[in-house]
Image (cartoon, rainbow, N blue to C red; front, side):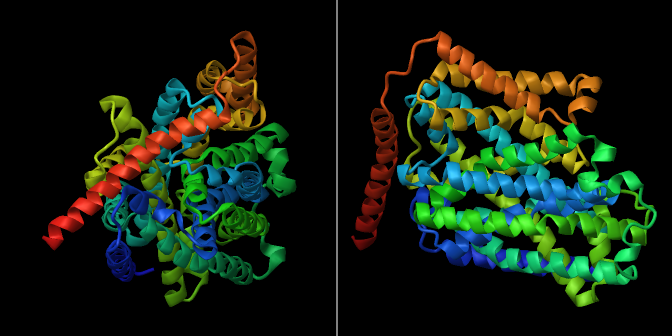
Length: 497
């Protein structure tokens, strides 16, 4: 594809996003408006932003590239993601009625609104947001580098700057509208790419041309091994279950029913979608088995098999999906900074009259940190699986045990968080263990659960009731919201005077 044409299209897209961000931000007055869309997102926006995040960096760049090298193993990302979002709908959609702002609020609620757990989880979630954001910057930069013919470092900086501008202006509402528009384009673009790629290579009979027979077995278990294949699906599912940006969609949804319906529809769509990245990846291998980087398989197929105009739209949609996913994680990170980390280090809530400006400053800082992480890696799947195993497996265990096991206490939660990270690092640093498990997620979850259960049983039971825990969190939140109302009233009186 002509690099000038692509860069012109990308620039036009960024300008449109800036305009959209300005338009939707005109009536924002509080941090809840900026960070959660006023907690009033309807079904079509919640569904659109969820689908866009699911069909984002991992599915487009990561899973297609994985399918290029490993055949039907490219389905594992979609299967793990679909199971993860369906379980999230079943297990955690009901927490919408508790009016949490951040995942650290939720996890601390399960253990008596314990401040230690809240602060520790806040730090870990902030790191997780930075990690996911870095993965999306990495994925988008691989698109841009390939399509525009620029070096990968420059592409990473361009991607980070591109979405920083519109999300700083428009906040979460701009993100969900962007997601919804691009989800439609990208979802149907994947279907057209799969069909076009199969037709381009002369039909299904040629799809397996030049591939190792081991990758043609179900989920390529003969190449990966059964346990590593299962581990890849598990790590993706755990990532969805513990990803702050998906929790953000729960907290910002109109009600429990809206959240649950959007997640179930997304999960079913994604389950049917799972085969497409593998097909596109194998077709890319049949067309050109010598790509320098497997992660370029998606843009390569789009530019090769689709008409120029449609290829341009799909590539920009794919690029925008990674940027929109990044925007969601940036917003989640800022929510943690303002709701949890700010009070951790200052001992008070941020002044509501400055909450939106503080949010914008924090966005720049969060994205800058994520860019630094992204500059250190060029492998999406390895980056994502290690980050999930180390940072998020413990949070998943905390959420599951906290929600369904009343005996779980704050000491057990801390043990789960520490145990998960220790187990993950142990596997990462041992090549034999890494080869056996595929990635550290399964041992990380097992150790986190075992540690949490054991320490909870050995220490005193939590004596704070769920009602009392919710009251503690509500009082903190009401303090923030009351300050906001007073600031808005004061501003209105000043203008009137």
